[in-house]
Length: 433
Ligand SMILES: Cc1ncc(COP(=O)(O)O)c(C=O)c1O
Image (cartoon, rainbow, N blue to C red; front, side):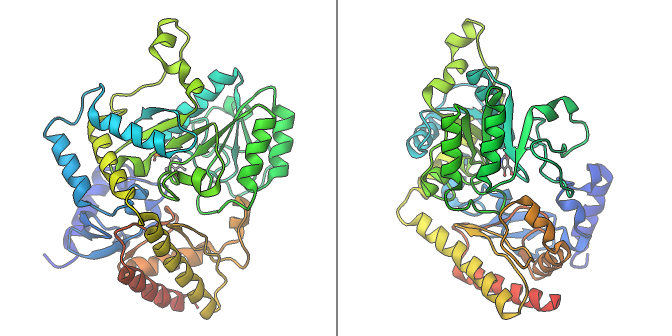
């Protein structure tokens, strides 16, 4: 077999059996076959496709792999647990160890409830908020992603303006009825939120926000402002920290920006690379999910076969144990800044209009001649240039998917990895001119 043949053959098989030949049709559908590795193994900052082609990885499993692929301590913890069974549907020591770590670390956390994924975590947090307040509406920000369920898949992907607070669904198959329950405001716009909250406060259960929305950082004072508006109007504030939890800081975005919400959703990093999700918050918010509440028939329904399973929690506890060591966040943020500063300098040197958002180890690039404050600003970015830039990276062995997640820097990335990435970025940017 010639080099590249095995990858091609497996892609054909994918086309025959998988819907659309991909695992995520919204992201991977846009890539031609020479940019679609079938991955054989990962180690540290890199992975290799089935033909042995090496990539420096900035997708990192869509964010969970903050220590890189197959970190030895996480592998050892998972192997230990696997040989003692991967699944109990009951309490276990790894579950309690991870719970203690999370509740002690996250400022808003007094109790934790596990889910199987981040998607379920946001779904359940909104149900808890509705149950606690006795109100039904929620407010989310335009362009935010909180998963794919029916209460959040609104106004996240559209390309045409609409009049706030009612936006279009992001998917076919979502009932119009929910369009009246999900209110939409632009990110980084406190006036808009204040007006919508005031108008709807009798019916509004919660405001849910990604503290860093996709790749857009919060403007100074924005999260504080959301906290004040929600508190003044007796509405729950939920931080979706599926991405930012244990990534921006040990205490997540709450610690990083100094704003404590009522509840937070977690996922990704807390599972050490294994499937997980969780909701944390004040104790009183979780009284509806106790055995007492269930026995009274006054309960919020939540649960799942794999929620809090021993394998994900053992891997998660091991990963957080490594992350907790002194200096880890300084190192992670240093690497993120090196990549972000490097991309900024290159675009300036080559006179390409670019906005490079960088918050800690989250880095991205948009080809646009002004800063991006909220989702509609991204419409002016040159999507074709972004695509060609990232395609250039992929063809040079740097895995950063156009239209996919932002670039996730991990503790496994070396300074040499970042230097190689910036070298590839320079070549790829030169091709854009
Ligand atoms: C901010 C945010 N919330 C929720 C989710 C959904 O998490 P999961 O993919 O684990 O269901 C994601 C996934 O990328 C996310 O980025």
